[in-house]
Image (cartoon, rainbow, N blue to C red):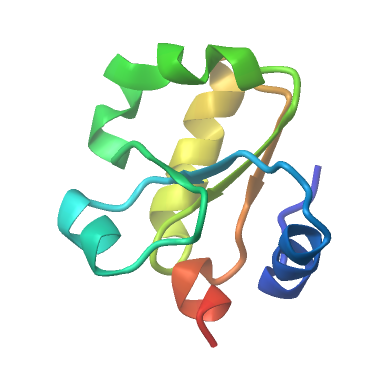
Length: 98
């Protein structure tokens, strides 16, 4: 599936959709700002913690970082581990906050 723009994500949140949003930034970045309802697993910890996401393998997972590069890495890793519908938030939290 294609990646997701921040406008679409905000619309879906406003409509009350239950979304799986994975924040792969570092802990200090997550403490500074976060998308409401996001789950935090830093990219470097994802291989050890991927089991925490097992329930979402068949559903949509929206992954984000600051600008998109770490999220692309996370998206590729999740796809290699059987996740079927992983979408990167285009422009990351930077675009989301504008």
